[in-house]
Image (cartoon, rainbow, N blue to C red; front, side, top):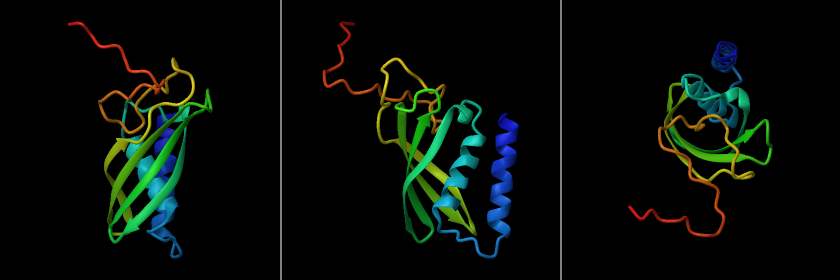
Length: 136
């Protein structure tokens, strides 16, 4: 399944690169770069999520994108990630990512992996009450 996803992302990148009408400063080009970045991560189960690019801001050879990852099993479970990308020729490369929101939906749900591939844990959903402090 992962190989199929990587092949599809690769094909999309080739089509974007070969198309005379493709625009490097497009939401689709940024989404393809993020998908390619995630396909390289072994700990990300993209098949369990839907990637939704919410907003992209372009500034010369830099782009910033806000992305939501929605669970396919529980559509109210959403994780937001902010990506910073840099353009190299006609393609974009992910430079960094950071969480923009906690997980929504069920408190005991999970998406299988942190979608931006970082090692830190995602923050728990906000309940409005402070978390209990350890006495040790």
